[in-house]
Image (tube, rainbow, N blue to C red; front, side, top):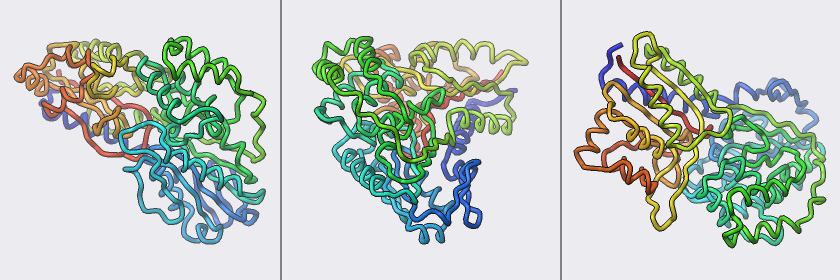
Length: 447
């Protein structure tokens, strides 16, 4: 079908946004949580509310605020009062909202996805709350992407500063989320089931919004309510694989892991249930429905394992775009995932995120953008340490870059995609979306 450049761009935005809206907790949680008289249903699990004295709500993540609001709405005013509902959820500072019963704690500044002293203080409050519950109480835990940085509790002998340095080094060396979590869950008293072990409620139910491809519950926010056996040897393998032994933080952590006792892990006393309520595939499916509504013949794919680099993913998308322009082929490709980015040394580094890097790599991969538009954005509205969710590319954007004499290869090399797209109005800015299920990419074409 023939579509104008403007329509391709607008349609890509609509399709992308439909995916983001589908994973809003206000739309997801009522599908899994409901109250019927004196019974609280959580998926197919029934909880007799007459046997519950108190309900505490705790958690952490980029979607923590919206999950809290959605859960309070589902529970309703009567239950909030009768069960003396209270709690504490760690969220980014720009996500704090007014709630009915649960405190939302700004555990880190906006745009800085790293653990902070405020996050440590908030985590200690969460551990205090769950530790004071009793066998007749119910604890509801809300976990979403970004929860690892928002829920810091370094083990004895490890400073927050050292932990932060190591986290930055892992990211700079292209470490995957699996590698990152393999290390930081061994360095925390709350991750890797630590929150579950600290909880003294009779029942602990965790509602999880996944930002991990494949939805491994141990990986999402480093699995604070997922019981596990400690694996310091895996963390040491990551340190070796990424050659982190050549930095001071890596050496310090390796030494600590070798001597830190692993027999500290005790089973949880609460009956623990972990329930996945949404993921990247949820967003991809909803985007596909919107594409169909707009008249596209679409193809969809949601990665279930770590992706290659942003440059490699972009190259693959551009190869697919060539066949998409042929009659009878899909004219819209929706893909979800999370590529990696290898960062240059900080002294050379610009500003950007993986979606911006991917979009810029796609721009550089082909000269022919006629009848083609690509949008790549983080569903959380936060791409790297920037105020943009991602970026888009179409014929107009490419021409603007040429008119300004911008060299895509130079900006790519310096991880400076933000400034490239900022100068030609190619950034996607949404502000916090209050959800987080990895990245969503939309490629629209016209024959």
